[in-house]
Image 1 (cartoon, one colour):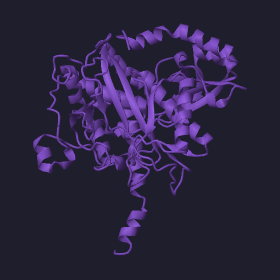
Image 2 (tube, one colour):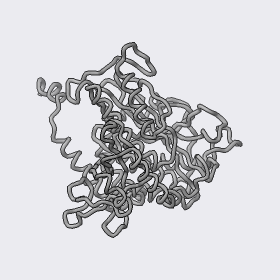
Image 3 (cartoon, one colour):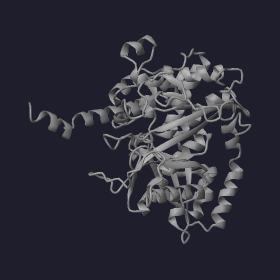
Image 4 (tube, helix red, strand yellow):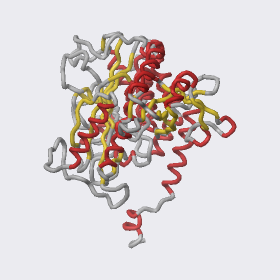
Amino acid sequence: MGDHGSYISEREAGREAATEAALAMCHDRHVRFVRLWFTDVLGFLKSFAITAELLEDALHNGRGFDGSSIQGFARIDESDMIAMPDPSTFALLPWRGEQTPVARMICDVQYPDGTPYEFDPRYVLKKNLRRAEKMGLIFYVGPELEYFYFKRPSPPLETLDQGGYFDLTPLDVASDLRRDTVLVLQEMGISVDYSHHEVAPSQHEIDLDYTDALTMADQAMTYRLVVKEVALRYDCYATFMPKPMMDQCGSGMHVHQSLFRRDRNIFFDATDANGLSLECKRYIAGLMAHGREITMVTNQWVNSYKRLVPGYEAPVYLSWALRNRSDLIRVPGYAPGNERATRIEYRAPDPACNPYLAFAVMLAAGLEGIEKEYEVRPPVSENCYEMTPEEREARGIGALPGSLGEAIAEAEQSEVLREALGEVLLEKLLQNKRIEVDNYRRQVTNWELDHYLPVL
C-alpha cells in the first residue's frame, strides 16, 4: 500500500503501458487463445474466447457479445454489449497447460458507444470507489473465503476429511488440494497470505493478501474458479455454498477492510485507547446502521440464511467488539499499535456473494457513517448470544435479517443501496431474489415430511 489517493484514475491512466505489457507477454509465451471474463449481476463468471491475433484490436476496441441471455444484462431490444479487456488483468491459465497456452483478461462491460454499462458489477464497484476517491480515500480489503470439498456435487454428501480448525491430518488429500490451489494462484500473480483447515470437516480457507478493492474483487472471482478447477483434477468437487451441511459451521467471507488517505491509514489513532480513529468508529456505525439493508447483497441466496443462525460462529446481531469473534464487526488485535495493520472485519458476508457488489455496498454504508458523522455505540464485551432479548433491546442491539425474504424487505426501503447500486440494478436484483424466494416456498422438504406427515 502506498500513495494511491486517486487509484482508479491512476490505473486507467496506465492503460497504455499495461496494454503493451499484455501484448508482449502474449507474444513471448506463445499464447494461442485469450479468454475474456466478466461477471453477471449474481456473481457468476462469464467468458468467451478470442484468438491471440485479435487481442490487440480487442484491447483498443473491445469485443461485442449478446447480453440479452445473461442474467441481469440487457433486454432483447438492447442486447449488443462490448467486453472491454482490462490489460492489467492479463494472466495465463496454468491448468490449460504449456502446449497451447491460454490467457485470461477481466473485462468492463460497455455500451457500443463506449459508455459504461450500469448493470456491470465491476462498474458499480468502480463508481463507489470513485466516491471514496473524491474524499481522497482508497478502499483496501482482505476477504477470507471459506469453502468445502466433497467427493461429488450431489447428495449424499461425502467429505474428504474429518479435520477441524487448523488441523494437519495425515494422508489428507485436501492438504494437497490447498497446496496446488495456492501454487496456481501464485502462478497467476495472486499473492496468498496463508491457508488452513477450517472448523467443519472438509472445510478450508485460503486468504489472499490485502489489496485495493477492485483488484481484490477480480482476484476473488479468479480464486473461486481456481479452487474448483484444482478440485476437478483430484476428481472431487469444491463448493462455496454457504451452508451445505445442517449440523456444521457454514462458510463465510469475513472481509477485513480499511481506508487510506495517501500513505496514512485513517482508521488508526495512536491517542485512542484501542487505536481507532473517529472516522473508523463512524465507518463502523455506518455498517451497523445499514447492515440489515445491505445483507441481501452480502448474503444473496436462500441458503445464506441457514448459516446466519446462533451456535455456528456466524454473526446474528448488529454489534461490534474488540477481538470477540461472535459479533457482526470485530477489530482484529493481531498487531496492536500498528497503523498499517489497523482494520475492521465485517463477518456477515458469505463466499457465494458477488464480490464486486458486496465490496461496493459495504464501502457505501461505511462512507455514509463518515460523511453524516454517525455515532457508534460502545463495543460489546459480552457474548450477545447469552443476553436476553430484553438486554439486547436495552442496549440497542438489533439483528440481521433471518431470511432472504426479510432481507428483500429491508433492501426495498434502502436509500443507501439505491445510491450504491443504482435504481435499475437494485430493482433487477430485487426481482431476481423475489423469484428465488417464491420458488423456495413452493418446495416440500424432507424435514416437513418427516415432522408433519406422521402426525397431521
